Structures are given as structure tokens and as C-alpha cells.
Image (cartoon, rainbow, N blue to C red):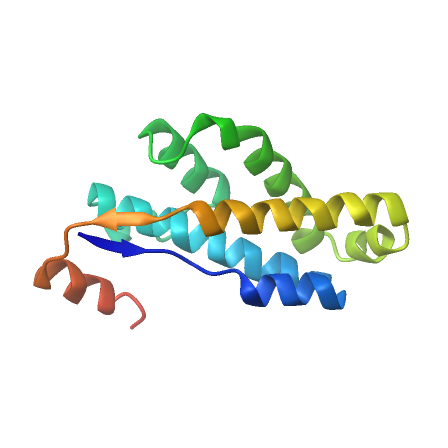
Length: 139
């Protein structure tokens, strides 16, 4: 069995340094990647099925297939909502960092997402075909 996981050293450094845009971007990317990999490696979904999916769709499919525990639903939904505001609304992050209470809540949410990513492993049986297909995804 092969086990894959992500370490959240970089996003945590971004949070610690106050670089919140980088933190949100990196946590979002790592979250989507690990949810993608769970579907790809553990359930055999193809890239073509998932290449235009949103974070919501990745979360929904992973939950539906029992790949992540339902206890994470509130955290994932809260992060998704805040992430969408930060990423898609230009001035939201500027307002967020000016409000100490909201900023502290966002920091805790980012750290909680890092914990989720750290605890989420992809476990599968490797085959040459599977690894070849995965290695071609970045082309």
C-alpha cells in the first residue's frame, strides 16, 4: 500500500507571517489536491471527470463516497465560504485583516484546515498504469 499526504508547513508559515492571501491560496490548493487524489487513487476517477470541478464538488464527492468523515462537514463548509469571499472578492481580505476578531477567527479556521489536511491521507495500491496516468496530469 502507498500512502500519500500533504504537510502544511508552508501554509502555516504564511499564516504566522500574516501573509493571508498566500495562506488562503495554498490551503485551498492543498485541500483541492488531496480531495482530488482521494478520488483519483482510491476510487479511480479520471482527470476528465474532475478537471473543472469546484472545491464544493470535490468535498461533496469525497463525503458521498465516505472518503472523509462527515464530522468535517461544518469546517469544510465554513472554510469554503470564507475562502470564496477572500479569493473572489477583491477587498474582502483588506476588511478582514482590519477587524481583529474576524481575523483571529480566520486564522483559527486556516489552522484547522491545515490540521484537516495533515490528517487526511490517500491510501491505495500502486500500479505502473496508475502512476503513469498520474504523472501525465501536469502536461
